[in-house]
Length: 478
Image 1 (cartoon, rainbow, N blue to C red):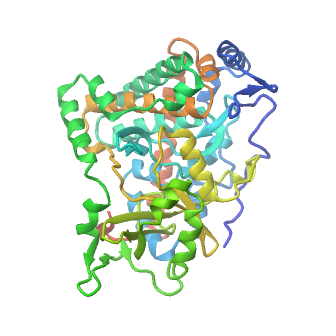
Image 2 (cartoon, rainbow, N blue to C red; image 1 turned 180 degrees about the vertical axis):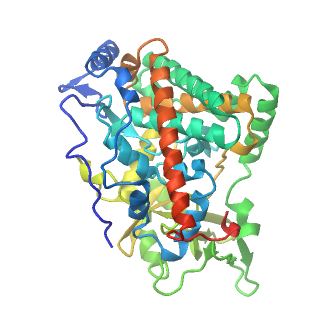
């Protein structure tokens, strides 16, 4: 079932837009100095101060309109779970509907015009630790479901707004949120400056190792918490979650998933992955690099279950598949439905496969990606496939004090700068952002405005729940 049409501008690109995805301008490769000069020239055409302007939504569109749009096509039985998780706080609401902010951003009368691959859902909880193929723990963006080519500052705007909302959510207050924005943007601009002196290959090979971040952490309290996260990360793999997720069949020796409804269950007839598993994974295998295909062939699928994940993804089709080798060593893959962006009608290049769109964006922006990252289709739905859990580490916001929160903001700024430099052009971005505190003040102003809008939207959402227009699941799904 296709989603209802949502009114969008006629186009995303404008006459002053510049494509940074190819590192060329008017058909010519840019030197570093030319890139900086181009960014400065763009700043004169589109002053940074204009980026603080918040859009007005079309009169017939509300947050509930976009919520209904985002719910189209989701599994009916899971919609109350999504609503419950989004209802917890303004921050979970913000996390749960990235399409709402993308919709607002596309209606903004002014953007930088500097287009490149962006995350599209760049809030502070979408950063964390993940494994490199060499089994080192890296830090960076770890969710790319909304990745697209768009103005680079859209990522900055979503991130700065998340710091203000989250700071209030964990009772640190607005001032700490604004200070975190300053720390994040300072780190972002500083790291862009460092990228300018590197060659393209050096930027490509650069990685933000979690141990490096630890070395930079001077506060001992914060450092101790991070050390604990880093030290346990290597144990977060398929084997570590077998006892919780599976049990062994005494007759066959194979393991299978333990049902835990409404969050984990085996597919019934007509549900996703109730049939066609072999065909799905044959297609998936073809999207892997050759050496990973050979590695994948050493495993066989022994069980599949549908699994509820995240906040914004609840209701989309998501499953996990258990693979075992001949000696019963496990590999657990996650299949996550990949849907078109709300802005996909405006894309200059249409995605052939939504899973491919996510994979390509992730590979472009991450320093290193999961060796089993790939995509496939089932029952006319597109899926992203990756390992479940593999050394993924997230930071617990609830346990942060102001020192930890601001230090985390610093790390996010560093990681986002590297992602943007790898996927785009650090020289042009640095030239556009300029010197001084202008961009900090501009984005702090934007964050405060959007935080207020998000609160209004959240209250509208909660009123709809109170009026029983939106059904909620129980606390057991949190």
